[in-house]
Image 1 (cartoon, rainbow, N blue to C red):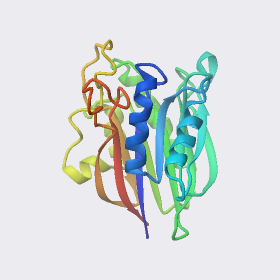
Image 2 (cartoon, helix red, strand yellow):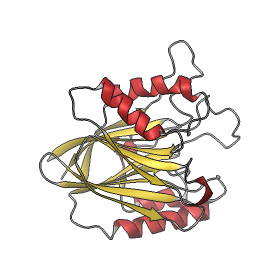
Image 3 (cartoon, helix red, strand yellow):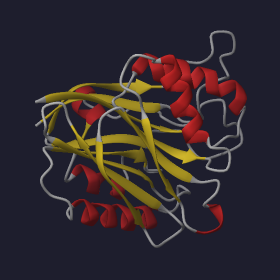
Image 4 (cartoon, rainbow, N blue to C red):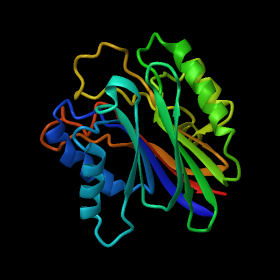
Length: 251
């Protein structure tokens, strides 16, 4: 069996004081050192994902380097809205899923663990705004049908910004097939993963929107990540979302 640290974070693109947020993000990313992390709202036009990967590797010289795998949204936002996965473990396959609505996508990677077993890692970002619960449920159903088309992995992890509060049907559907890592470790979801003061203009209710779901793995540890403000500015966080991490034993 292998122990793997996974995480998720919505980057909030390159807006909201990005130049100030980047060093803070890198500090907390390299302190956590996840084996695999799913990122949402990645800006391709500025090579945001590649920059984060390169800068993280510079800081972690001498350890296994990250590689980054992108999945752009279709349509007019392809240059500025993508998802990305950074992995320090070998990746053997990478595919994308177009939800065929609202230019939303998911991506998946088959990752080879140290003991030779496979981990299937999914990264997604479901539809916004809060009122779009039916659309999110449809996307979650399509995601799970896609999960069923890959077989043979010892464990499956699904991460992302689901834009869904814990009482929503899309989250209930996911929990019918997967364990929420944070809930498994603490008995409940986090009180809030969105927003931080970086986003001061969206009036949506605060709450938990980000999740790590696991199957075929035992949750050893889970918690919030990228949740520490700048020591000299309590309004500056790595993103407008707080991330979620989990340490799991796969197999």
